[in-house]
Image 1 (cartoon, one colour):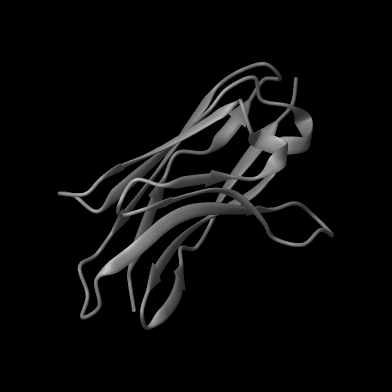
Image 2: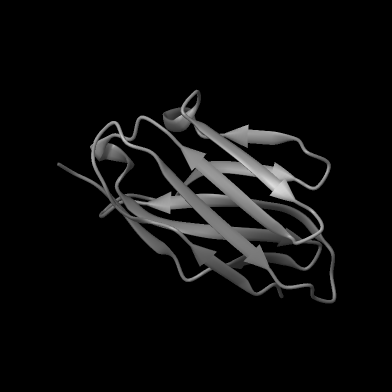
Length: 115
């Protein structure tokens, strides 16, 4: 199991930017990929962005063109930069780490986009 420590989040005005970071502990199993998911009230959790150790990235449709995910392999840390934030980006953002053992999740960080 991977221990994930999230940072960032908070209140952002519409049109603003946000940076989320997540650091993973080194466990028994190597990390294959890390990413961010989010969940709005009364909605299912959805993919925001994921990056594989090799550098391949994938973004959820709602954030494509507005987000960039990057990885620091030496520190097992990922950073998500989101721009032009919209009220519908509001939700709890969860860091995810994938290994051959399975998925691990962070505790979540609240992002609220409001004037």
